[in-house]
Image (tube, rainbow, N blue to C red):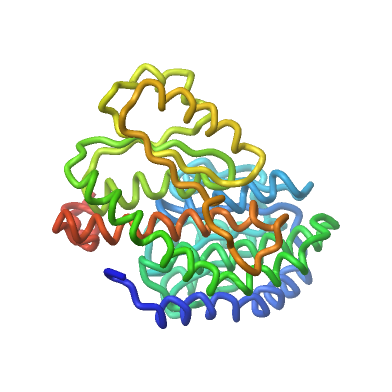
Length: 337
């Protein structure tokens, strides 16, 4: 596969699996001090990666939690953030300015901070109470972060008296490296066809919902806009019919991201409409994959990782067919702003 190494992928994801035990020990330490609420704080890609965790908590737990963008979190200074708060964040580089500032602010009020980083010896690693490190790269970052975030979320819920499936869910997470490798292999040809078809498309509309909404948002902004400079709008399926519907044209590119949770009918509704009014509708559906080894009732929980794996192949092939490196930036981290 273009731009992909099997051994590296499996090594990174197994590193995330190995961290599950560490995450449990970190929560043991956090419980000794005590916490009453949880803040999920990120920037850009990591903000979107926390979205599936927020959905998991929303639909399976009574735990008090908040989900916010790092820069706004620092400016707003939420009153619920206290010395009895637990902040969860992530940054592969460990030096994302806004995320580091958020961790430092949370620590300044006495909150405990768990940070998933590429290296503990980084600004975010040093700012966190509990840095958890695993080496990764952009083509495997999302999946390895999700394995760790989902494990953390499951254990948080279990300690709160929720999510009786926790132990079985963790066992399913441990099988995900090989499962996701197979998804990448199965989706590669389809992803190449999509990239070739849309290499010159000037605008895309990405639609998603539920626990795959974060992946929808992330791919539109962090890949197509940041890495490929293609104007793209991400719209939540529940909001599509309240304004964006009027943007529908015969030549409008719609990309629908479908998972397997309770919100799937919301995306189905958009799909039914746009297929009547546009000639360019693509659907990336996690149900297209067997996910051998994953329990049937666990499929909806791991869907965001499957979606990320599907879309990573698209980004790799876009890089190739458009002759536009995923690493080039005109402004981000290159000029003052």
